[in-house]
Length: 70
Image 1 (cartoon, helix red, strand yellow):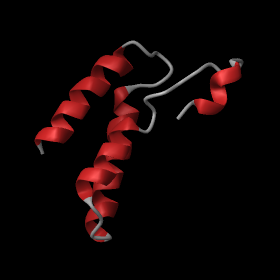
Image 2 (cartoon, one colour):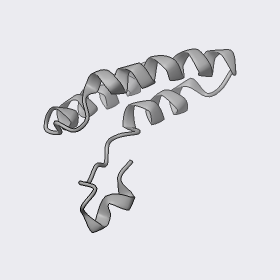
Image 3 (cartoon, rainbow, N blue to C red):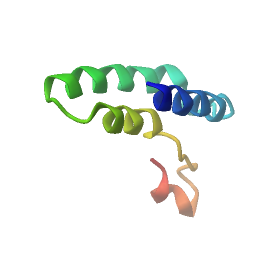
Image 4 (cartoon, one colour):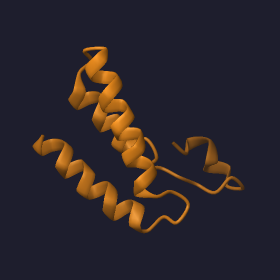
């Protein structure tokens, strides 16, 4: 899916700058989401987009904004 490839490329760029989260974790979530969404006949583009973006916002736990982390 072209859209998912675009999202994946952007996530790689963002995750590359964030040592607290790595892209391997995102891909494990993505692969699990793919299996589950197929079995459940869910909207794959929606589910897989969410899987790719689930850790995109991250603030340190000491930050007042940490409650907004994904």
